[in-house]
Image (cartoon, rainbow, N blue to C red; front, top):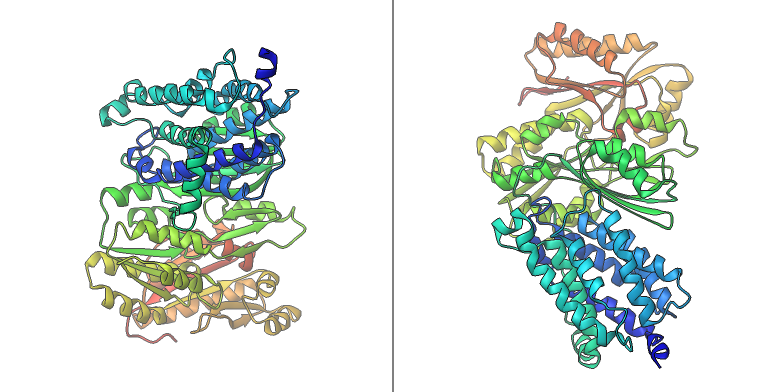
Length: 607
């Protein structure tokens, strides 16, 4: 008799419904989880991260499943795709652990097998964490799983889940006393509560089947779930700047090998590896190096890197009531961007099958190293609409107004994407979007001017008008070794570019007043072009026209330093900065390119 009861089967439809109800329960608790999030970093995003995970599970389980094991497979796969943050990756590892253990059992749809699998998966959840800390999500997972007694009369899940839920609740409440930071703030651990909310909804779906289903049907058209991805709201200064997350496929190394290699790159490391996929979370100052290593052990599918330090500084003390936003094509020193609280929308670069984040997970020198190994030409794309909306969602809570200065609309669709995002926002903050009609350091100099005006406290409307006028006083002159990248990317007219290439002319590449690529002068050698550029700036400065300038390069620092010294001789002062150009710009300018961007005094027409 006992044997037949232990083989009581689970209805796969009820199991799927339970997973979905658990996901909804957690999503609806998102804001509460964000508010109590103080460990391991007070970044206020645990609720948002777990809600993202749960939403992915909901989306990936929309279609009907035919068995219990198929339900767990869908949930396991979805959890790796949607996992964000420490708690999300631990969640994912645990779900995958349950699925993996079920596969090893003779029966995959019995209550007994379910209980056994959730217990065995505890080990895998612990292994996802570099340094497991009790009093967090891992404690509540263990307490819940261990409370499912295998020796009891396992006739149905509704008989064993309620007691386990009580044990999980006690474990959750006790987290306040297990960690000093939780006790100090008198809160439970946010990740632990997220797991409890999920299990609560999961349990309710089995225990009160009819009432839960009726409630779900009655509210199906009215339940509103906030699925926006909140940026970090950090209450203490982070040791590492970027919250970096990467999803890999075709993984060739074990979780322990990946953890050991990444230990030196930062902290808050969590690694989940299952069935050839891996989700990695790390706080690091070197996201490009993290991704560079991970690219050797798998195929990167997704990645993100949030600037926690900038978000912390803005949350602690913003410098002005107007937020200044640009995109990563605007070449400005990293320290200047951070010190002046300038927000950057990252461009995306597709190399092979991997999508990189400009200036964060890929640097220009890395790009040229990788480019030679690719059969297809790398491509770039503007920030997604969702990325812009998420940034606006953060900024509107911190600022009264938002000014966005984008790369020339003739070179990228970024301007139009940002304009579309402004139409969708319901914020009371005023938002203005300006097409810089420039790129690279010329765009950077325009942003510098706008920043100085913002810091001086001028009104928003005046800021907009001054920025638009300043566009005509900024210019960039580029010397390139090879015209092919610019021709292929459409940055310069194809016909003119091919003629110049055919007769071996070296052009000066610039932008016209509309922000389109333009060939403005020619010489028969690289030295001849450099001489013409130096002479042009010297002539401008004699009429007191040049206010400041910057030198940028594509993996050619020594040449850029030479330019800086030569131009300093010509105009009498050093460049404001010398730096590598955006990887996106480097794609079209080509390796070895050097450029000078300069600003003339307001009210003076360029030559």
